[in-house]
Image (tube, rainbow, N blue to C red):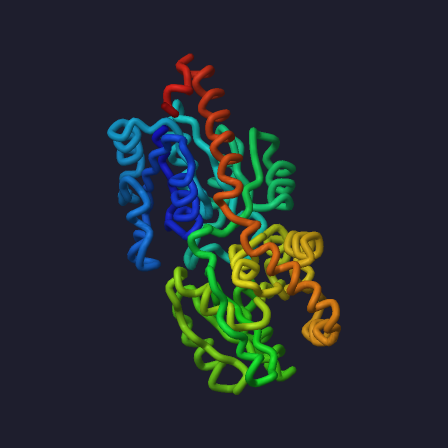
Length: 374
């Protein structure tokens, strides 16, 4: 089966899928089209896991997409958001090719723009068309699934969380910094923002953590020098910049907890449906997760007993004093380091692919989809 991945900016989730597909017997060939940077340009690696990375001309998307489908005999399109304009364009451009729309985010749940200068009315139309006119959908959490289904109606759909790739899980762990200095070290990895109220604006939160004399170590997805400036204001805030994802998890294993709480001043509804990558990455490198009561995360953390949730940093500090509970959570996290991987769940996605292609074959061509997997 020839599958075309679409995403304006390719991301780590695409790499995870590609790596997992290589572990199965199914013959799945993945092409990746995009409008932003390549994976190599953004992360330093990743392009090599796809048959071909194809840059789309934003001014000529229709022609480019039609040509790709023809040249590479594409059987299925798997389009990841956000924003959603590529899904909308492919639905309008190649209607006979089954298209899966993957919701990792929802513009309609946000009060801050997904990207600077975004035209929100157009993005909302893109979201509506993509979810209503696609052939099937994937969601990263049960809460997002419920929201999209309620807003745009039902579709063939599955939930596929932001599992980690087995290849990224460190086989050994570093000695904890706290073993030598007897202080508590928390790490945050991921996106950072300086826009007041954005859910990635974590400056006030980090300052509160430091005020309790807890160390907070920051690994930035990119480089935000505002957080470097913040670190200069406290001996408990440490800005480490960007680190290659292949090295990051081993580096993080030296800390005590992973931070996954967000700023909810403007985007609480959005945060409540999110199950971010970092949640699974912290667990894989032995770190119990610390988070506010974000709905999806709270349910996961408490169900799996892999961390603490709370309303305030003061409440967090109080819970951290419960040594018996923390020890129990640490044991649970260690036992589940290899539990939440893409590889363990990829068969579910492949089965979904087959169902979508089979359904579309009956509608448009009457061809047997089984030949795609020989």
